[in-house]
Length: 103
Length: 158
Image (cartoon, rainbow over all chains, first blue to last red; front, side, top):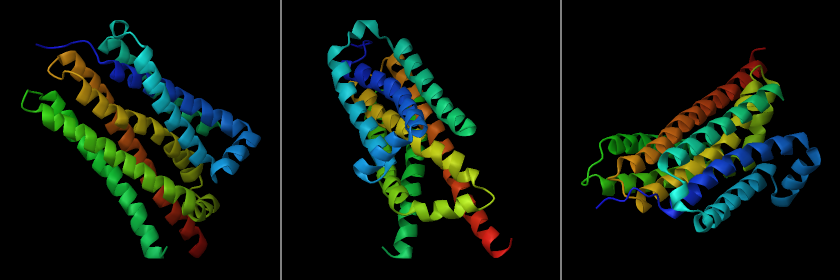
């Protein structure tokens, strides 16, 4: 017998991928526009990129597990989740590119 | 670390990145031709893709923080300073999206019924994004390497 309902962990981490892709772009823009924040991030772990990576990857994992526990599988079908991931990632990549083109 | 070790480590970073892309392409092919017999292979390919991308990120991240500043100075002083100001900056932050998607692959593959076409569609979307972003990041790496060479060319033959 087949099961066409997505597993809760998949939905949680799928949504976390979408949310964190956007947050990653926003953190980057905010960090670059706010030199004291960039310096504080660099001071924290030796390099701003290391701190950035630890923050976004840590949040990705935490958010993934939290959303997996909180989400209702019936409200997220494959089409909706797939589109959310696809467009968030495209938007995030384009935002990062646009920021560095204009910055 | 010796100069040889530094150069080898950046090549290992690229090697795992390219391997991750190749594994993701193989995964794409298997998902498009999914059958009950293929499911174990789809699952193991998703896992190896994720591991390869994670290893590439860890090695590349270490190299970027420890050894890249010397190359950055050469690139920025040369005619291709945009190899750093656009391509490296873009690559180093877009790589996180690639990591999220790579980690998502085995979660989709192991925790869902892949005999359902709709579930496979989600795996296809995530895998396709891994391949496309992987190729873009790899291409950016090539441009950054050329940026170093152009920087050196400016020094020896202005």
